Amino acid sequence: MASLKDLRVRISSVKSTQKITSAMKMVAAAKLRRAQEQAEAGRPYAERMSRMLGSLASSMTEGKGGPRLLTGTGSQAVHLVVVATADRGLCGGFNSSIAREARRLIGELLRDGKTVKILCVGRKGRDQLRRYHANLIVDTIEDIAKPRLSFDKADDIGRHLIAMFEAGEFDVCTLIYARFRSAISQIVTRQQLIPFAAEELEADEAAAKAAGPAGAVYDYEPEEERILQELLPRNLSVQIYRALLENNASEQGARMTAMDNATRNAGEMIKNLTLVYNRTRQAVITKELIEIVSAKEAM
Image (cartoon, rainbow, N blue to C red; front, side):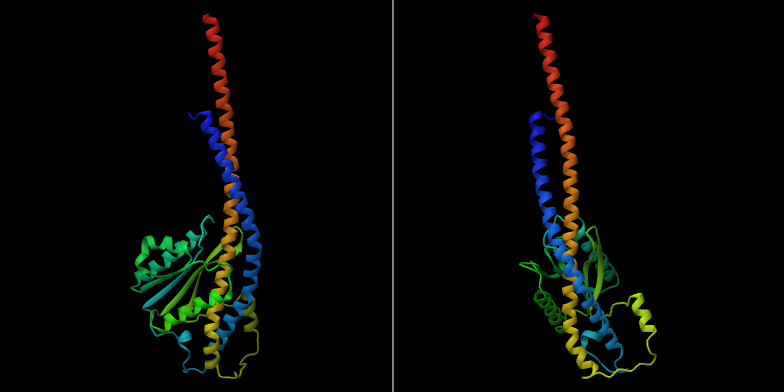
């Protein structure tokens, strides 16, 4: 059984840990509000831009070529998987869930005989994936949110992907990130970036489109192909920026929840240790009284 001194040291240590987790919870809660606002503000623009490009691509003259970012290379032999995670831990299962989905996708592609390359955005994704697929990781981008997350950094990643694509390093690029739903819920999402794949319409927008004028014809100035050449690279950066914003909000929400649970668990542990300490202390006092009484009777 632990001594009274050992119990006092352990209670003091747990109380110190509780103070740290409580402070981290408050910091994450403060960051979450701003991150959530940014993520929610970025969704409409990214979604509508993707749908507009999808509509534009579908309206091109049949048989007419388009930019390679839209049509692809004509092959799907080499896949680039971009795994967006955090640079820090202590955020529950946030990083693990993204890495798990990445391993699932990589396994599917390898079983289909595809060549897979991995680009990690965030240290935690790299640390988890290199245990199983170290030879597939081609690059790692770290500290993307320092000093703050900006569109310029997402644009740099987009330009890097376009350069790799034009150099023939991959045929298909898929991004994996966590879409923010609430502080306790994040949705791990796959999104194909290259070649461009339009997002599915929501039920109400699909119904509105179906109810629109039949046979409507639109004229574009300049022509569709030129518009796509200008907007597809920009859309790539926008989608990456949106994913990073969603990831940031998901990370802060997961960290706040994890630190709240840790603080509660520390409180329960302190309560149990204090109970054990009091019982042990009472047992020591009782033993000393018995020894004093026994010694007196022996005299």
